[in-house]
Image (cartoon, rainbow, N blue to C red; front, side):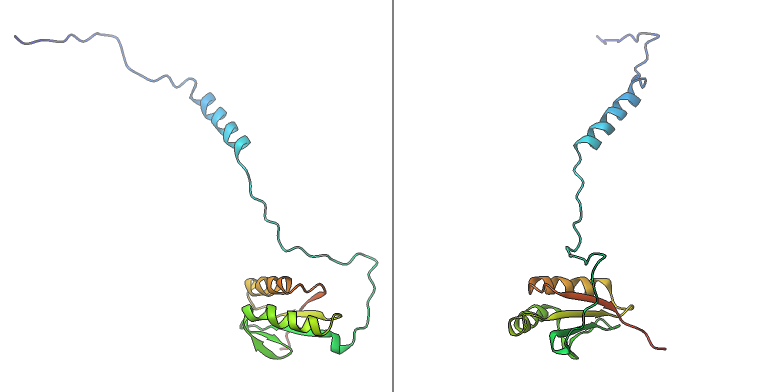
Length: 138
């Protein structure tokens, strides 16, 4: 005995799309409200105010740190690796509390190198930092 199924005529199985836009809009609002955006803090620096004066500084109180075009970092002309900068600067600050770290950056060097050197200066607890761009002589 074979069983035969009858099809109902006139019924179509469709999903109503009338409220799909409403659902998508509500989901969009939900994700916008519940999402947390991360905020980059950048490099914390205290910049001088408008009334800052130019002061003369003795050469013995200046530590020259240069980042050359090939990203070589030198301290007073001696090449240093980035991880060893913290120890050297910390040692020199202990010797001279009035030490000012003058960072000269070549325009062709990588920005990442400058940020890494600034991070090392911050770890060495250098409070007086001067940033200067190198002049290119052609």
